[in-house]
Image: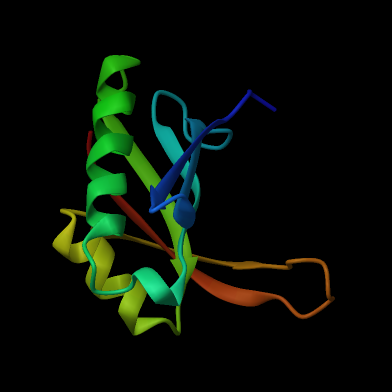
Length: 113
């Protein structure tokens, strides 16, 4: 697996959002946001939007032209966030087991960097 970059967004020294990204391990030529999480205390504050902007800027600086990510199918808040950030559904769906033996459906989103 390729090394990942981690960006952490802090407010008053407290971590409120996290982004982990790297070249995609499944789609040649694309980057992949492997994790993007915001703590509920930061929801609505704009910190996740700032972090996504910085993530995309870093991917462009690393010479990536497109990026994809996976999000759980049943999380409308994340769907709204990624759509607002310029991502669109690719039409690809998969199930992913997070280690508890109960695979969950995920939807792929992508966009230019």
